[in-house]
Amino acid sequence: MLKFLHKTPQKSAYLIIIFLALFSTVYNAFLPLHGDEAYYWMWSHHLQAGYYDHPPMIAYMIYLTNFISESEWGIRLVNVFSLSISALYIFKLAQEMFNSKIALNAVIIFSSVILVHAGYIITTPDSPLVLFYSVTLYYAYKAIFHGKTKDYALTGVMLGLMMLSKYTAILFVFMLLIFIVLRRRDIFLNKNFYLAILLALIVVSPMLYWNYQNDWISFAFQLGHGSSQSFEIYPHLFFEFFGGQFGIFSPIFTAVLFYFLVKERLFFKDKKLFFLSLSIIIILLFFFYKSFFTRMELNYSAPAYIGGAILTAYIFEHYKLVKTFKIGLLIAIVLTIIGRFGFLFYLEIVQDRMYGKKEAVVLLQKYAKENDSFYGDHLTIAAYLKYYLKGHPDTDIALPTRFSQYDMWRKDNFLKNGLVLTRDPEQTRLEKLYNDVKLIDTSVCKKGIDGERTLYIYRVTGVK
Image (cartoon, rainbow, N blue to C red):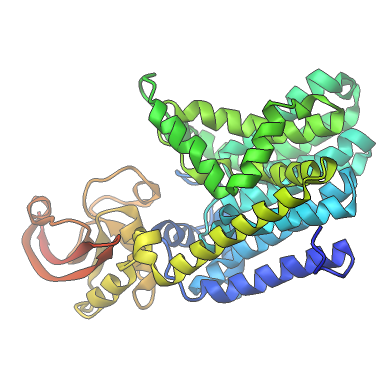
């Protein structure tokens, strides 16, 4: 469909993947860390089988990239690796299911949308989730439709690694079970099916044991996180999340995908399409439902667009929607360029939580004295301090905030004399903890189009 790609579809796909990986690696060197990235980087220096907020895979992957570089671009190699391999397996699965032409177009679609480019920038547990979702989808398809023991075994291992990435990987399990119950009940009589289950359980067992040792604290947090205590419905939150899908996967691509899934009931046509469609529908329906009760982040639906890229490419080819594909691709690329440009030059507008924090830590460093301890008022501020301060000293949270991994590591009497960086004036609350609290400086930066953000630096002594 794209005449400027004269090489074979496979070589063209590989060139796209390699170019985007190299471009993103260089690009990421010019952006400061997000607070969550600094938090996960901190985990990589305290490896364990589980964490309060998430399973451990993000920490393991950052630990490995630390051997290359602990700079911003080094940490984000997790994204570059994860999304590049994901794109490769999207090509492999689409080629396995359809043909090389559709496989190339699936990679083009995946590589053009702003959701994926945002994923290349900010390191979150969604990066390994997308990686292992793609790989598991490929091997699960091969296991179900070709029945080889090797593919069942790899499905089990990769499913376990996906569960170590993010707990929403459980949706993949539901998807597989629904497909097997409705279309392939004979698989329940296949010993390889139980081999896959056993291998998955072996892979996740350390994480399960860690949760058992800690009263299932991580599971409890995630069940409450992104959930509402009441069942009051907020339609505007649903429409916000639903509408956001047209932005992150491009308006034309999303419209075409949703139309053929719903209007044409494409997923009922044959087993292959049903399998692929379920990998999209289960995730979207789950988060659409949740969005009626609480705000959902747009990245939560990211795994849906792995199968979504393949199915959209199939639709364009099967229904000969050449012009629609070209228009959709042009819109996707324009939106992505705007987003990339905004991240690089207008970070205070596009992602203001990444803007100005690094400069505040550098300013705080000027006031540091020997034997000072360093504190933030939130987990991300404490993580920023640890990452950007010279020598990466241990940091903590001085003021009450939401429970985090800091609370699980913290020892009694952790407060000491030192410096505190806060997002709001905190003289009064700090005076409840220290006898002497002095505001020694502030760091002012832009926020949004016309706004400002002020960060406050306090010297605290005399723990009460």
